[in-house]
Length: 108
Image 1: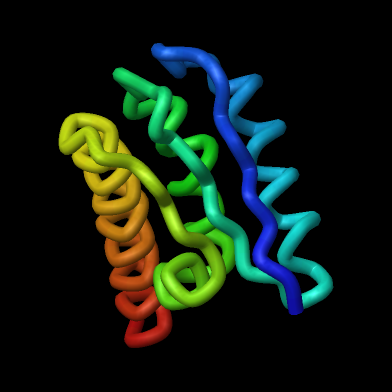
Image 2 (image 1 turned 180 degrees about the vertical axis):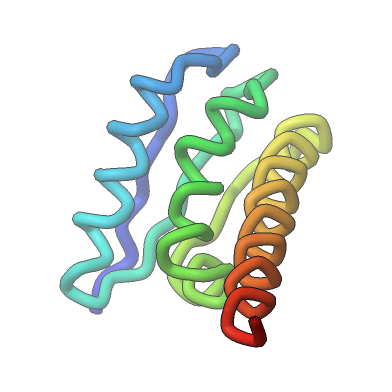
């Protein structure tokens, strides 16, 4: 098992298309059991849509525990970490609502 560093370049990240590429890099790198560090130290701002596409979609598909166990986010900027946390929180809330809908249909 290796630790793979993914360095994100640019001071302001906002493109869902670019975020989807980053998400795929993360997922590909973890296929062999590697630990991933995503370095956001040069990033000054990240849109919630970018954060959602890069990290929220992973949480929706793999779960929060999987993300925490396999991906380390490196940043000293509270605003960047807050955008990521907000995007993940929204995904988790959506998943909870979806599960509640499924449970209610199962009970009907």
